[in-house]
Length: 341
Image (cartoon, rainbow, N blue to C red):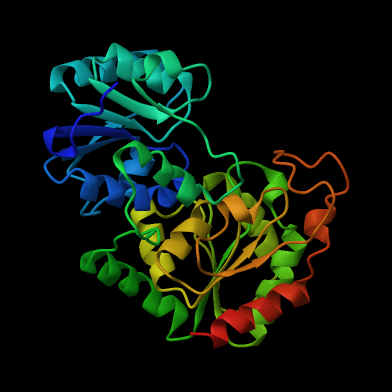
């Protein structure tokens, strides 16, 4: 089948990944789409948190936002299909690999449907791309989806935009807390599961050492992580604060913008910090930094354990991949990235 000319594509809908980290890693591909299709209006189809994350990116013209709440999936699925039909998109690009996302584009009468050959959905696509055979970073994988139309020469760093107003509001929040002390942000959670999380006692040890050094420490996470962080912080004295569940995504981005160093498990906030170019220590256990590590930045700590990466949500063994990483090792890494700025 002969591909359409990029100059003949006037409307594009891009189905964005559902996870924050994946969406951040997809931003170079979004930039490529803008450059490959200069005449097109680009709509991003995304859940509300992902749309909030990607606000203000110049490569995006508008969003179609959907809810992932339990009990609303069928209603939202049908609503989006009707929206796609109404808008009559020339090209639909699937950065997701699910069967349902391809089915949605097919039912929504999107003219050209571009996606990876995965999950038995090739028949629903009229531009189907094979997944890379070699293991590579997800930033490269997302970009290779566009290979039928040609790739841009250079791979950009993932990027997020923080507005001046967002900076000013966050600076106003942080000033009375940190009082001009260096701010270190610690992220002890990970949405995927406990197998990605360095032990809470180790995070406490890092926080204790940083407070002794005169730093300010802010813990971040979602509302589910708040109790864990309260436990980590119990008995600590000094400028240490629990922001888990108390920031919007936009506020979290602004908070990370003002950090001096970020220490994080493999998670969405880790990728946000990397996209902002912050000094970063990334702790890996069950996952593979070659695929999902901070792209071209940061310092990764990972031990070579035979069963890692296992990609499991919960460790079925002795958690050696994480327990073999010491507090002292992480503190040395913090000092190293701190000194490189």
